[in-house]
Structures are given as C-alpha cells and as structure tokens.
Image 1 (cartoon, rainbow, N blue to C red):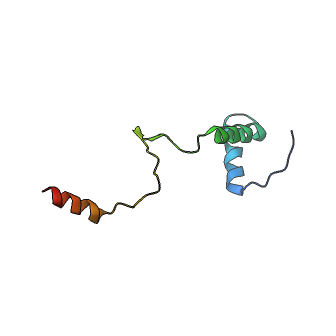
Image 2: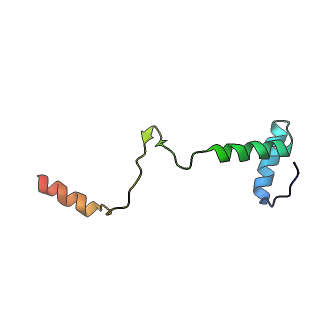
Image 3: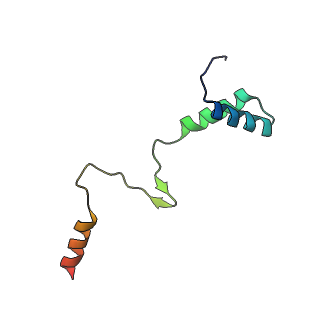
Length: 74
C-alpha cells in the first residue's frame, strides 16, 4: 500500500541507515518499526527486574513526613 507521511529528517536518516545495513527497503524497515511500536504495552510492568506498582491518586509522601515517622519510632 502506498501513502505519504511527513517524517522528521533525523528519523528518515536513521530508518534509511537501518535499511542499508539490513539490505532491506525503507518501506520494510518503517513498517517493522511501526509494528513494534504498536505492539508495545502502554506501561512497563517492571523496570530493571523490579515490579512497578500503579500509583493511585493520593497524598504525596514527603521526606519530612518519612523523617517524622522514623523519629517517632525511635
């Protein structure tokens, strides 16, 4: 399928470089990169092997609050 897209110059140059390195067409490379991007989850479930927890709307915990609680326990 043919279409016209407005692509930033740096993105186009990077895609052309990948196409040249892999001996593929520019269209194949751009299609693959678009597919990979569309398959990515909206948010990571872990980062560096550490599970991420969803932050619910709530009160911000400050360093002063943590220090006050620590001092109470002493």
